[in-house]
Amino acid sequence: MDISLYVHIPFCKKKCRYCDFVSLNSSDEFIERYLRALEAETVARSKEYKNAKIKTLYFGGGTPSLLTARQFLRISDAIKNNFDIDLVETTVECNPESVSEEKLIAYKNAGVDRISVGVQSLDNGILRFLGRIHDREAAINAVKLAVKYFDNVSCDLIIGVPGESVFSVLNSVDVLCGEGITHISAYGLKIEEGTVLYDMQTAGMFETDDDFAADVYDAVCARLRDKGFHRYEISNFAKAGFESAHNKCYWKRTPYLGLGAAAYSFDGFSRFNNTENVTLYAEKLESGILAEVNRATLSKEDAMTETVMLSLRTEGGLDVKSFNEKFGCDFMRDKAEALEKNRRFLQIENNNIKLNKEYYYISNSIISDLI
Ligand SMILES: C[S@@+](CC[C@H](N)C(=O)[O-])C[C@H]1O[C@@H](n2cnc3c(N)ncnc32)[C@H](O)[C@@H]1O
Ligand code: SF4
Image (tube, rainbow, N blue to C red):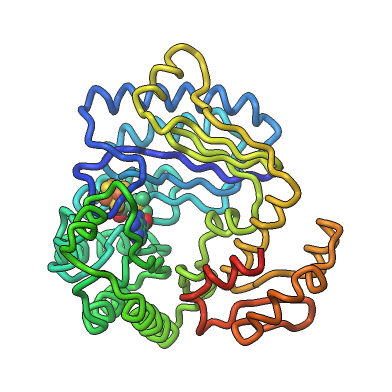
């Protein structure tokens, strides 16, 4: 069985104001303790997955580039020494303030072939609003360094941030493309409960504007199209041949295994995840126990819902024939009413349903009608 492997490094120098991912600022001692636990989980899980071949590997966070080169190599070696690997893509997420030439060389020597730099914006005012600890110059330098060593470099942007202008977002896009990157993920800002931005919004310190966010998204799509990037998922744009193999596996619902605190897994039938409590994660592994907290086998309805939801976000859309065969249903008949209601947002031809690209920004409401 081919699988994808995700490794979570839950450490950051400082929490960004918008972020609700599991990440914290820890001591060097605790990071060492976490890495020992991660090695132990790698060994334990590799025994369960001895018939699996790892096709894609993704070090995400948190901030994987916060690890020293030596710490990164420890984990990378543990994976190679325990799993059967046949990698087509290995990605490391890097933050501008912690990436360095030495680390990039170590990644390269370890077989990494894709770097994802968390830029978010090249506008210093927006970076401050988001609570990022780097500025425009540091982000550009990190991208330059990544492009020097890697042919496949992606940048994350957050768009639709209150106070930004279309001009400033397009400047970020232009400058990053000018550096020779091959992929951009442009995520609309989500204000998550429990974050600093959520509290600021609740206190009336700023307002969000969906129409403005839609305009920014359209402008980014058009600019990236002009620059030869095609949109292969709602938030993801790539030069031909540089689509992320790892992300595609999530959207196609092929199996993946997550290692580390808060990491999620899917074995084709069930979803399960590790505890989000990083200390508990370490304690469990120290006692020789996996830190898994939830395991749910998906019902047929769950699997159908996920398939519709994930495939409609992608360029390929929903293949109705294979959906009907897989789930023993007749999608066009069963969803006739919702399909009619959303007719103008959809492209339906040759047993395939796609969202019309100009309606991507209202995808959530269209998709929820269809599931
Ligand atoms: C979990 S972060 C890890 C990447 C890396 N630590 C960084 O900050 O650059 C992955 C990406 O998710 C996006 N992201 C996280 N929280 C978000 C939010 N509330 N709204 C929109 N995008 C978000 C950011 O673009 C970020 O780069
Ligand atoms: S966005 Fe990245 S750097 Fe910021 S807190 Fe989240 S994981 Fe850490």
